[in-house]
Image (cartoon, rainbow over the protein chains, first blue to last red):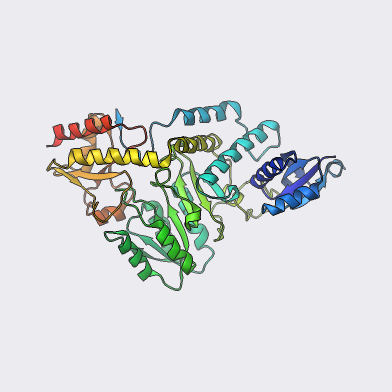
Length: 73
Length: 378
């Protein structure tokens, strides 16, 4: 199941994807349209909490996590 | 044709820069950060790679690296953006500044938003530091200083001024219009905000610039609009780079700018500086025995970037540049958008001619230039 980690800007999402890929967590930056507005995210297949922990260590704040099935509702 | 007007913009550009701009327009021309489709994503990746390259070059974080239209645009963001956080702050600047510094400050002063003082650069670095120290007041919050004067290349002691500003809690904004790509400049030197053009010593296209901050001093936006982020909110995002990057980026420009930075890195900043210094020394040696040539330099106490301001006695600077242009030598005459340095040099009545070589000029270019001056003006 894909998860989307929400970040505050595209630059943050690009940097996050770069950090996660270097940490051997395949990640792709993706823009999503949610009812609350457009958000920049990184899409990952692995544990999003672990990914957020790695990002926070690099000073990147995760604003939220969405699972793919939530987006389809 | 021999182009010696590289302080206005470098020409020619490296072929790698031209190719990077071409590829950006031909191969990934979608709007980055707006759409979610594959081409937009690929373009975003290229823009991010460019942002990383620029950030690394100046010791900044990618998120604190803002693409601007030019150095003036960056300076306006920095000066007005920091000043907006205080109630009528005092700003210190110097008598070596370009209008891109003094005009935004004066405009803020005229609208009652700041007060300011101009430090006297004297004849050496110590004079300038002493003058700045004397001008610091309890309400001094910002110091805006050029890394090198655009008229004659005189450098300023940025690291020492940074130490002083850091001690006093003053935000140091450096105008690196002439120095970026010639002097090693980094936020790690204590500069809080670096403003730089993309199209001069970084060899990028015109219409590109950079503002890089260490994040210690908050900024406010002076232009609001679409950023691709927080699109359902009425207020401008308060985080960088989005806060200062409203509207579509000059995508091909910033991608080509990164290619320009790679060109500088591949040549080596020190090598470029040495080469251009050699050319300017050659010009000075070639001109100094001509009694009609007036050179505006004081090598005994001042240090310079490879830029040379001069005049021909009895010939207005614009006329001299016209005669040089007729001979195929392209230099800029007049006031160089810098009335303060002209006032300091005593050239406010007619301006001066400025010679500014680039990495592409050769010793032969300078020899031809000096020979032409001798032929026309001795």
